[in-house]
Image (cartoon, rainbow, N blue to C red; front, side, top):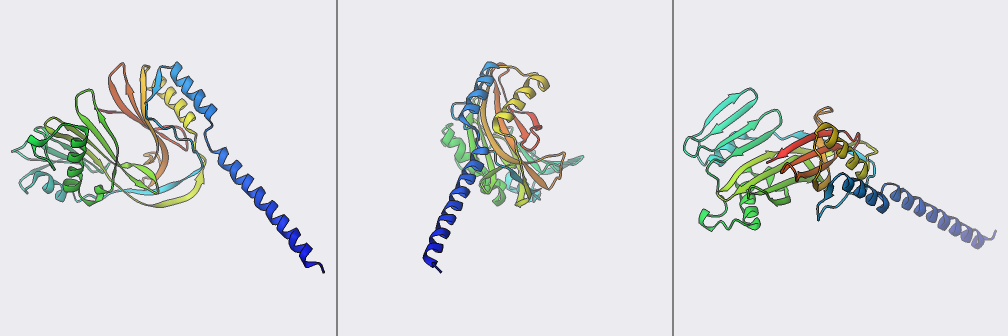
Length: 303
């Protein structure tokens, strides 16, 4: 038997199979990548409707099938957070439905905990300086970030310290609005975020959500591409919210969010839009379920 010839034949067959597999992998990858033509087309459609894209916006081009994620609301030690916030145990607590409101009669500052949503809201009537003295507060984006991070580290505690800064925006009211997100396996978690408003008098307000993430679950399902999400957004703005141009989309990102219409311990992939209505001078967020292209969060105004 000519074993050398058989070896050569096997090498040729294996090489051919490897080439076929490589072609299939490349073709499969391209199948789920938004083409340049589709990006140009959706950009033109948005422009025709007086919707522009922010200067630094990056349109997600990958829309491979995605899995759900196991996610659950974080169990806050709310009394511990309140004591760190007020600096002493002398604060009053009021209960209204599922909400708890903590207040300090001296500073008039308040902290509200929304039990159902796992959200903590801080309102500072007189401002709140931390990490920097009031006379040294430079009122710049960098100073706002230093102050915000000090608040996260010293008041919110360890669960929040791993969140990363997603945006630091100077608003029309002269405040810096900073948004931090938690992440898992490279995906931002909408249900784990911190929004901090820093004014001239220091921190004016904080909104804090926290969720505990574990792992991906189930099988991967197809998701809509970003251009299809843009079209759904356009239809939602015009026909549901009654908002027309001029509009600027400041950000679009793929995030994970708990859809209230589904399993409350599972998060789905979603398109998160940050939008500014230039005519009405308001900024708001909209979130679309990437599986269904239906809004989960519709026009949540960010003051």
